[in-house]
Image (cartoon, rainbow, N blue to C red):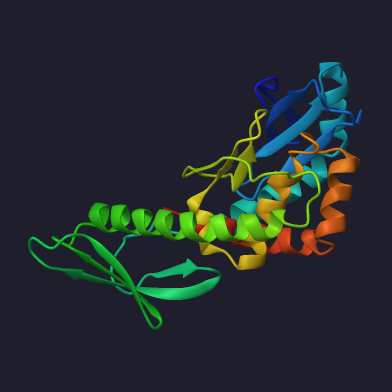
Length: 249
C-alpha cells in the first residue's frame, strides 16, 4: 500500500446482512470512479479518489450490494471446507502449481531438511512436531522463491523499456497478498507465490513492475499489462482460485 494512501473501515446493511469493507483513499488515483473488489478470502476492498465524499462511496457500495453479497458468500463457501494444516505425512501441498504429498521423518538430533523426491516433499526434523515441520517448509519455500523469483524477474523485466535496472526486492510472508511495490520502487514478494504455476509468478512480477511506471490501477496501468501479457486476466483467475489453499496454514 502506498504511504500516502489511507485505509478506514466502514459497513452498511443489506437486508439482514452487514457488509463490512475497507475504504482505501488514493490521492494519486486518476480514475474518478469508485472501484469495489472482493478478495479471495472474502474481504471487501473499496478504492476511491481522495476527493470522493463518503456519501458517494457508500452509495456506490449500496448499489452493488447484491453483487458483493454473492461474491462474499462464494468466497466463504470455498473456504468452509478448508481445514488447518496439520503438517503430517499424507497432507498435500503445492510447488510451482503441482500437487505433492508431504512425508515427514523424525530423526533425533537431525538438522531440519526438506527434499523433493518424485511426487513427495520429504521433511526430516529432530522430532515429529508440526511447528518444526512448518518452520522447515517455510524456510524451504523462501529459499526456492529467492532463486526462482530472481530468475523470472530478470526475464519478465527484459522487454519493459521503463525498467533500466532491476528494482530491489525482498521476500515477506503475507496472509492475503502476493506482492506489492513501494513508492520508492522496492518490490515485496510473498514466498508462498512459489507454490503457484510459473505463469502466475510471471503475472505477479509483471503487475509489480508495471507499478514502477504507473503507481496506481489506472487504465494506463492495465494497458501496460495488456500489452505485455494479453492473457493476464485468465492467469489472475487461476491465481485467485488457488489463493485459499496456498495461504492456508
